[in-house]
Image (tube, rainbow, N blue to C red):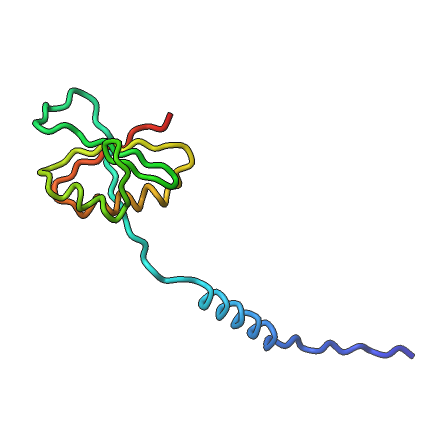
Length: 123
C-alpha cells in the first residue's frame, strides 16, 4: 500500500519577511542628500574680444595651488581675486589632480562676482 503524499500549501510569510528586510536594508543604507552642482560652459571657437585686464594663471596640482607663480591656499584664493573687477582665470592642471580637487577650486571661484574661468586641457 502506498502512502499518498499530501502537498502542503506554501507559506508566503517567509517571502514577505525577506522582502521587508531587503526594503529596510536598502532604505537605511542609501543616502538622500543632494550634491552640489558646478556649471561648466563649453569653450566657443573664434576670436576673443580684447580685454583690458590680463588673465590670471592658476596652476592646480595634487597638493599645491599657484596663482601667477605664487603659492596660495584654496581658502585664500577668493580673497586674492576679490579686489579685481571681472577677473579672467586660466586653470592649468598638473598630473595627478583629482576631479574632486578641481571641483573644490571651481566652487571657490564661483563665489567671486564676474569671474570667467577657463580650464586648459591637460598635457
